[in-house]
Length: 294
Picture (cartoon, one colour):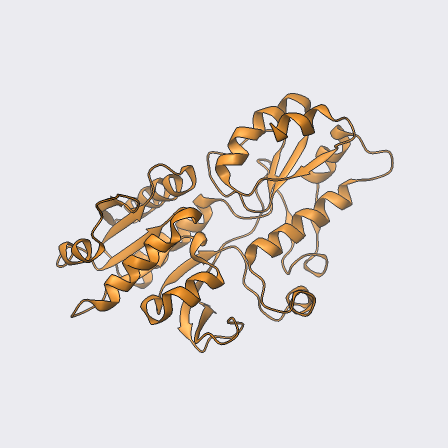
């Protein structure tokens, strides 16, 4: 196991990992045994918590709380249908924390549907929700985003009023813009970072020859934080301590101040974006992009 190998190597003083929350959850006990700091730029699950864990991205609880508030208070949604992957810790956690937040606001999750069911008929599901809900929220695991796009396409094809679509941050990427087309127009997503006119976004665009996403930005922040923690004669204990004390201004990060609370959570709120035709910073030759909701 990679986590064991890293933990057993005394030259490893800190780790920037892992991509998925599932992988992070499996690895954290190994790092905790030896006091090896792990800082993740992409693992957002609320199930992740221990003394050596930090992340440069808001947790699922933070992002879906904003989604729930927007759906209830701005869109006046009273009942909503959720499509998710019950076998994915990431997707399941998004559903659970959204349902709790939405209920606290007086809303109701009318039904929760397994997005990965082999016999799932997306057109039939869309039709069956008529007269019951006014919005649908999509929480696919990164491995089954195509299922969510199929559902959005079914929503676009039915006659009559379309359901308002909302979604989790796994839908925030160029793939969904190129594959979804006008079917995802109006989709609202909670995201941890948006490429505005900050110097980092402009420099990254020049370096990589195209637009970057939140994963690139949060990975940059994690790298900067770990480099700053590698002081003279660093140890695993000193790196962990210095990481927890991180306080970097926006000028040294991807665009926002970087600090952690006592639980290792980044002290930063998620933002909302809407898929809009002609939005700035969209991929080349693509009509749709993500527009920040002010």
